[in-house]
Length: 240
Image (cartoon, rainbow, N blue to C red; front, side, top):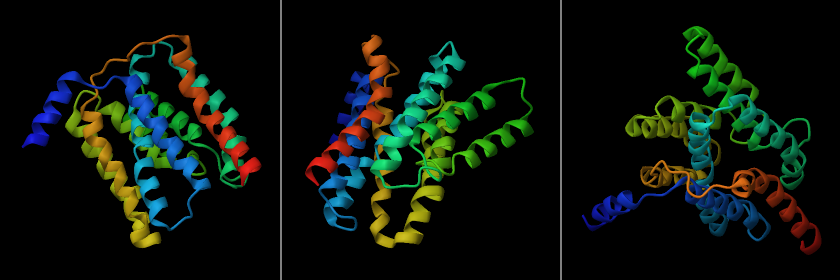
């Protein structure tokens, strides 16, 4: 009961978009950074992955919000495309992936925004909207978080004005396409994937406000992704 009252009080205060961004990049940095200090399959790595599951849902949520408020949708998509290009080499280098078979989450975000733009376009027939989303999901397969991220962005945008529908769609997509396949492949080791559901009360606290904005804060979130990978690559090279 006390926890519910605390949550209600926090809802009155709320979390703005800047605070959500800070939480997302912190979870991402911890998840990626501690790969240097922990081994896969250990309890330490499990807890790091659990905390890291907060990053992508928050990012998808904020991307859907940005799409709603952005007046120049084309410029917004071109900006994401630019950073998808910039982030490609640092991503595949840090995670030791093929340069031609994998790419970063920025590509997933771009396709999610394109998918949301298609769905929101009233001139597009429903069947073409479905085909458009399917194509975006297909093109996202090589990228980190692939079609899961695309569908999260689209669902957050579609149900923007209904929090219950948003989180239900988010949970169903995550459980069916991310948690369940992980449990099938990795067993109990993949239970950290349930950590994505911990984001629901955090999203509930979002107050719809952007927070203080300036030119630096607008670009900092974009630059953080490739630069934190470059930093981690440097640390691995010089110290490991």
